[in-house]
Every structure is written in structure tokens, then in C-alpha cells.
Image 1 (cartoon, rainbow, N blue to C red):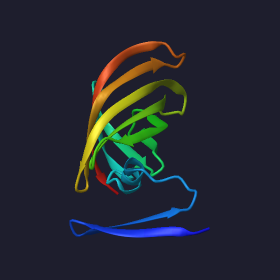
Image 2 (cartoon, helix red, strand yellow; image 1 turned 45 degrees about the vertical axis):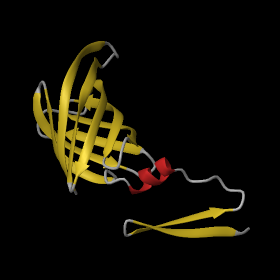
Image 3 (cartoon, one colour; image 1 turned 135 degrees about the horizontal axis):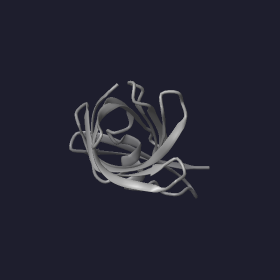
Image 4 (cartoon, rainbow, N blue to C red; image 1 turned 180 degrees about the vertical axis):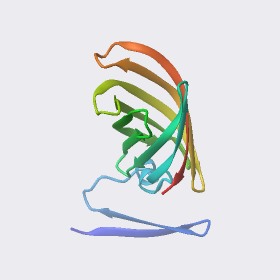
Length: 151
């Protein structure tokens, strides 16, 4: 199998591209996801109608996302979801966060949908969450914002 390798210098930034004969081309969007500044671990605060709490987020280059919230005396939330790049430093994400009380008993779930931006080592995002009880009955929607720093 032969490979074609190219290096392009764009504005002082070298970008390498390798394409094997018969392989699919890597698109600009796929390349952007692999190098997007949101990729990594973040720790911060989520503000919502019930107040605020701690939150940790992990964005993977595959487009997967993990979330952990709470643990500060008001129950916890854990969830997984996906994220996608919407620009060089902007993104959207969606997560189903499963909620539990301080004893670990399920209390419901939240479908989180946010858009955000990374500036340096700071992540800011906001959106509307849909809140459900433990039986899956819709309760309400709530605006939420996240401010976090890279870990």
C-alpha cells in the first residue's frame, strides 16, 4: 500500500496529511474535532434555577462526552453524551444526566443541551435542560450555564 504525505504551511502552522491509497479522505470537520480546544477535562460550576453546583466534564476527540455533577450535599448527576464542533473554538453538546440523592437512589434525569465556547483555559456554555422524574415523566425546563477551567 502506498501513502501520499503532504505538509502545508498555512500562516506559519504546519499541517500534515497522510492518505493511504484507497482510504477515505479525512474531512476538515473531522480534523477540526481531533484538534478542537474543548477536548480534555474541565472542572467548574453549573448555574441553574435551583442554584449552583460543581461540575466536571470530559470531552473526547471521538465526539463522546462524560459529565459528573454535584457531590456537594445535594445529590449527584452522571451522564454521557456527544459533542460536535461548530467552529474553531465553539461547540454544542447533548447529555443525558442521571440524577441520584445523597444515598445513591435514582431521582430522575435531565436532558442537557448546550452550546459554548473555549477561550484560553476557560469554557463557557449555556442552554436549556429538560428535567424528568424517576419514572420518565416530564417536569419542567430550566436554563443552565456552565463556567469551567481546564484540569
